[in-house]
Each structure stands twice: as C-alpha cells, then as structure tokens.
Image (cartoon, rainbow, N blue to C red):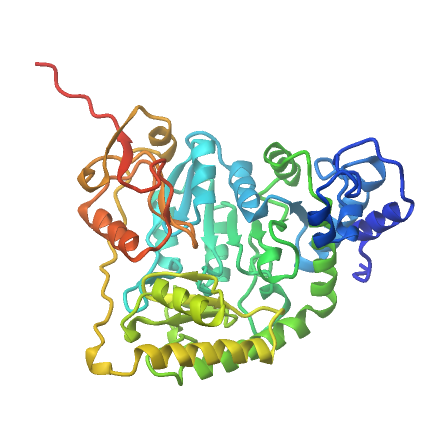
Length: 490
C-alpha cells in the first residue's frame, strides 16, 4: 500500500479549500461564532477542519470512504487484518476489545495490575475476572508482567475462559514473553487481547519488544497519541481475524463511541500512521539511542537508579522498552511525588508520573539532545539538593499489600446495595467502588474485593504524601461505599 497517502487528512483540507457555506454543527462555523481570543490562539487551520460526518468526509461509525481507506492503511502499517480509529482514547478501544468477546457470566483472565478501563468493561459486560498475580518488584516498588506459568495454570483451571488479556508493555516499559503466552493461549482456542497503550513504537523497530500483532495476538489497543505522534485522545484498535469477528468489533465500538467524532483527532491518526509507516524505524531507533544515553547518565548520578537490561532474565521481565525512563529516587530519601514537585518547582519540568519510589520520564520522537540535557541537568541538581549528607538520609519504606480477595463479581458489587462507612474502619468489608492512583490508573481496590488493614494503610500512606488517590465518590477518601451487611434477626 502507498503509505505516502493520507486520504482522510487530504479530504479535510480539500473540503476546507472549497470554503463551503455551513449550516451544520459545530456551531462555531470555522471559528466565526467562537470567543475571539481562543480562536486567535489555536489558529484558523484546525477550525477549518473541525467538521462532522458529512458525506465527503465519511462516517467513523460506518466508514465506506476516506476513513475506511485511512484505517486500511493503518492495518497494513501495524500488521493487522483490520484497524479501527478511536477518538475516545485507548480506554474505549480496550472496552471494545472486552465487550466484543465477553458477555454476562463469561470468564476473562487478566492481570491484577490492569488499567481501570479494563475493569470498567468487565463491570459493563457482567464478566467474571480471573486474576493473575503480576510479579512484584519490592526493590522498585512496582508490579511487572505475568508469567507464562501463571497463564497456563489459569487456563488449566478455567479452560472455558472467553479471553486472556495481557499488558504489553507495562506502564514502566516491562514485557513478558508475549509470543510464548499467545501461542499457549491459542492452544485452548481462546483469543488474546493486549493492552498495548504504551507500545505505539514497538512495531517499527527491532530495538524494541515484540508488538501484539507480531506476536500473533487477536486484538490490541494502542495509544498512538502517547508515543506515536497523534493528538491526545486518538488511539487505534488492531484486530486479527479468526477467533475475533471484526464486524462485531465495529458494532461494539460504535455503541461506545460518540457520534460527534473529532476530525482533527482522526486526521492526526492518519498522518501519524504515515510518519510511522515511512519513517518509523528511523524515528524509533533514534529515540531508543537517546533513551539509552539518558539512562547511562542517570545511573551516574548519586542516589538515582534507572533499570535497563540488568532487570531482564525472568518470565515477567523478558524484555523492556528503553524509551520508558523509570528513575528510582528512594535512595535520596524522598518519594517520587517529592521528586515530581521539586522538578516542577525548580526546573519547570513535568514528568509522566510519580509513585512512592519512582518517577517516569517518557523519551519520545519529540525529544532531542537538548531536552535530554535539560532532564539530566535537573536530575543532577535534585541529587545535589538531597544527597549532600548521605548519613542523614532515611530511605522511604512502603509495604505493598497483597492482592485482595474477590468476594463478589465487580458488577454485582458496583450495582449492589451499599452503605457509607469510614475508610479507616472498612477492614473486612466488601468495597463497592474503585480506589486507584492516577496515573497509572491501576486500582488498589476494586468493586467486590475485601478491604484489608494493609490496603487501608497503603492508601493512607499515598494520601499523606500527596499522591493522587482517586475513585471514591468521597474525594477525600474519608468514607467509602461498601456492600450493605444484613444483621441477624433476633
């Protein structure tokens, strides 16, 4: 296929050049009805292509023209049989994957450290999750992937599972042996769904881990906006025919997707695909080289550590994406949240996320030697500020709790009869809402799980250092919704 072509982007520009008289939404009509200050700031070009699904521009819900052509080019670029565009991020693509293959009562095998969108889809479907324990790294204070062994045990116990979902790579860039897992799951004629939110570049370089489509997975949701050069909220869903019906996928996606689809976002996917297809290897290799130099330099800074190939060797740490620069700050005697705030205050530098022990910096095709130099300068200054007297440093120590016991399906708990109780007194109760730290959006507690005292202590530790704990209706997490307990009638 001719990847120089951008059928959707070209159609939008051609339509704008004709300067049609518009009697359709959006009501700003090329910016004329918009606040002038905002219009002048964002520029005329994007307003000219902020259009709707009129006939010349096709319809994302039932594409037959330029959107279909753009999706076919994306499928070719990513090695898929079919590709679908999402203007509601990878969260909607992930929910589409699950709802395409799971119904009420169906089992789905998933790692416990999944994004909340996966658990939201499980609630909507009424599915029953079979959780896999990710391999926990107590030194770094993070979870990695799952092992092939754990997937095999889950399938032996639940051969009737409707799907297996794998994260590849994790938010921190770590990968399990995806090809081995896919081959194993396919022996059971079960489809493999991959949360590939953080893997937009991996299909285009031998320097990066294997992509979902390369490994033979059946569906993969990929955030092009995170690393692949499209605008925020634009993602794709790649599908392989066989165990999955692409028409069913299109139907589910249409159920979830807004009918007011954003053409600037769709066009950014079309052009990002062009750049990745034509220059992906060159772009990815340059980014990997920048990241490797940055990692080497970080590891020379006192009190800081960034894992690399030294982490590899286990089933759950089979490979890693070097463009995810995870920087461990515990030996400076500070939390990742402290580090994030220090870098913002002193260097106007923003990181992707912080947790108790780490900050995560994404090295992308948008970086160059200059941006890396600023990062390293700021990290050296932070080290000097906190590492001056190593004798006084008291390392941050946080005990990560065990995965809670699931007593009810997430759907039954979410829609069950509930009551509010003080969070600090909720040990032993079945929680009916999510509690998670965002980013990365991985729930510490999810509906249906039994709250333990360890969970309570862990969440309070996060709250006390200022990490963004979210989910409960009570934003202060003072009270939480739990399943109502009926008292015995005397």
